[in-house]
Length: 225
Ligand SMILES: C[S@@+](CC[C@H](N)C(=O)[O-])C[C@H]1O[C@@H](n2cnc3c(N)ncnc32)[C@H](O)[C@@H]1O
Image 1 (cartoon, rainbow, N blue to C red):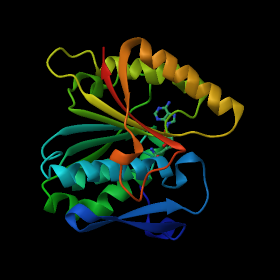
Image 2 (image 1 turned 180 degrees about the vertical axis):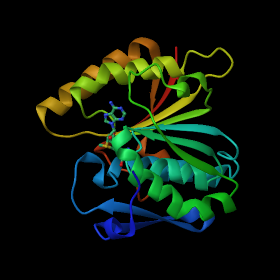
Image 3 (image 1 turned 30 degrees about the vertical axis):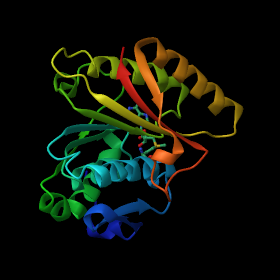
Image 4 (image 1 turned 45 degrees about the horizontal axis):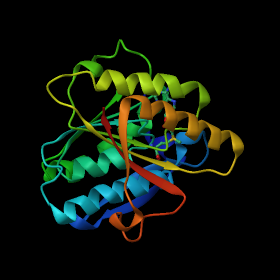
């Protein structure tokens, strides 16, 4: 399924500057819908952190093979691609049409920076996907700890993606800490289970983008134990 001109009228664009390379991403959001109809704050924090890392080391992302899980509208993956990475953005099959529209919309900016972006279906826990056979330098996730039933499948996918002997990816995850008891419990469960197999380092706020950081959003660097 792809978005036709008539359905684009039900969308509204959000423009987000990537200051470090003077490009502006245009991301179409839906006027109404489920969790992936807007760009979430956690993805802004992660996208801007990638940018911050490129201020200190402009070639940091150039040519890296990057995978994004639960991309939603694609801000994080599109930022990495505009900073020169070869990015596979993934989500549930039903989320891909808008994600692909956002890739197409930003394609010329991405290719002018030497980057590349493609969208593929990746359902967490589905080990049949060929994506698990690939080796990535970086794996990115923003606001993916949201669904109780998806926690174990997501952990399974992270283990699968870390099973290659040649290359162990570095993973960055942002998550908004929500007030509800159920969300707090979900986060605690995920964190505890993640720490069984992975080293987790919390990136302090002062190392994040000066205008895009928040005490409500955690940023973790994760590697396989
Ligand atoms: C809260 S949204 C965050 C979207 C985006 N990362 C952002 O921060 O703007 C969570 C995303 O995870 C995706 N998702 C949920 N369950 C999933 C699953 N089992 N497999 C793959 N993706 C899933 C949703 O479709 C959605 O795009």
